[in-house]
Length: 187
Image 1: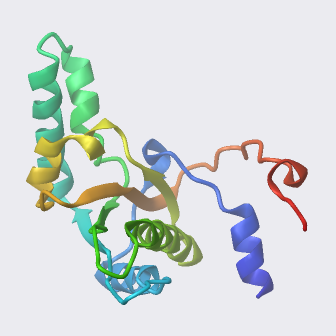
Image 2 (image 1 turned 90 degrees about the vertical axis):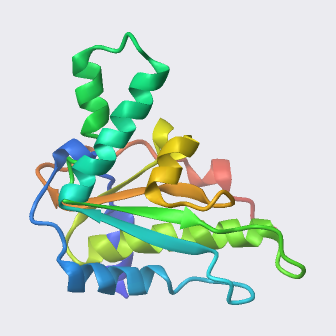
């Protein structure tokens, strides 16, 4: 338990440009995703799913992201388009966490959304516990229907974010955290 608490107290997000390989292999990814799926899930709906993006798929999706950006920004510089093209290419693995939360006769959508967030955070913690560094990001393209369609999301699905996974080249300094007396009420 102490190791778990230490991990939770010291975990830091590492920006994708600071993530190198090797990333997790398929067996490690499957172990991480098994942990990610062990979250509270009222009604056993599994209101989430995962899209694992590795290898050439990172560049292929990057082309879609750049083309989408270019369509909306015809005057974008080649440097900016290269930046958009590389969004998923920094870390060796990016896992899209997809929300399937929606109306249900018994289970409030809000509870489903919370389960999606828990799955994403379990994914982050599991990857960190396996010795990898992570960053959970959305970015503009996580909300663009053209990119979501290219990723194979159904019209009713949303993207909770991309979890970038790799080996940290360096760990950024910790950011200020809220003081407990500002966020906790004891009754």
